[in-house]
Image (cartoon, rainbow, N blue to C red):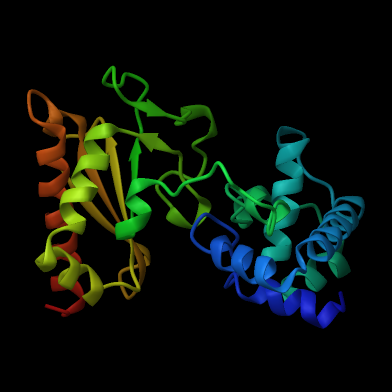
Length: 247
């Protein structure tokens, strides 16, 4: 694979390799049959970056490769700048939390299925260790260095009540119409110990790429979680529509 073609494919990520951007790259590589050649070059670039640039001791091993993959995902110009400088890699400067996706781009994922929220463009995170008995989460407070910044990935929460809520929302024409009006905005629910719901635009109020709604765990106490999810998603979508003037 020629370098120009490699960087053209990398460019489809829009600067970040994560669960949202890599599926399109997977499809492109699968259709063209270039997956193996692409991954060979990814591996070469990762090795070259790690040979040239130091990574903190706290981020060695697989994490170092994810950081290098994030450098590649950022595009050719950023990659070349990093190599030319040879400076140590600062993890906080790179969206590496899900960059592992780039290291397996184009490989078959027969057992994989998208998380329920992917179908409506909303992620769910329970940022807590004490969970309902029927819920699973990969959240680890020790690894939560990026806080709520959606550009740095998120933990995975599996909740049957959320799956049911997504099914209801998919069947709701009014919700679909409103979500389509703000389809370019990533929406994120973060459930945690808090006193009230807080809506936060990212990266800034005047440049809204994502919106995070923090929801108190108490909102789910003695309530049907499916119903609560439906209510907070409706509030999230309506608030973003109003803020952007897309009613």
